[in-house]
Image (cartoon, rainbow, N blue to C red):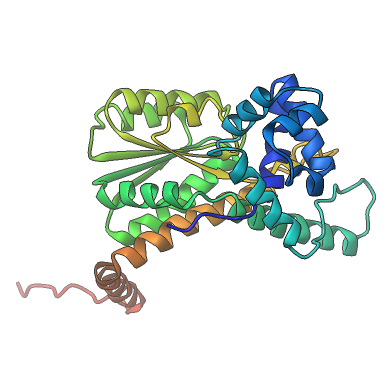
Length: 297
């Protein structure tokens, strides 16, 4: 199974403000001196960042990586990439051409960085869970609710019993009787949305499989996920006026597309049959409705 050999700097950027002080010092040092950091041992990194080798090991664990070697490999991959345009905040009074350029660039960067953080073994597990499911329930609040509805529209094409909810009470009624053949997907950019975390907690207690889709790192939502999936969009948060989940929304949609296409290709023959049946029904809808024949009196 392929594993990404890039994304180390992205992961550090995503996580640095969530880390304990000693681990944050190491992360900041690596981000500022990546070329030097990739040649260091754990002891050397601890010394250069005024921490310890134990803190370096804890950092790698906090980042969700197997160890320092994986972190250095990913950073090495980052350093070999061509320089790319960075995320840029949009300021009040900017011209339309500048806004078009920045919004486009930020969206592309969010998608690229999300791709770099993909753990392919976890992705394969998520696809297998969805493949085995009899019922799939998507839940999200606010902008994430739109992603849930998009996901429902896609997975219905695979002849799966699929639902999408954005209201806590309706979602609770829907998952009241879930079990081992059900999958509940909780979508939350921050990973801290109370309603989504609660639905995930209840679903897991009832024996359903759970998948989370959040920004990178441990969170209230991902804590209740059997399979945690992550997106990148941290640069969206500190913008002077966050424009309603722009980059994060596209990154979430991108991950839903990845899941759906993986499931389709894994069940290609069945999917082709389902899609043909859908096309036949859509063609029938285009026909002019016929009037029912009246019986002669």
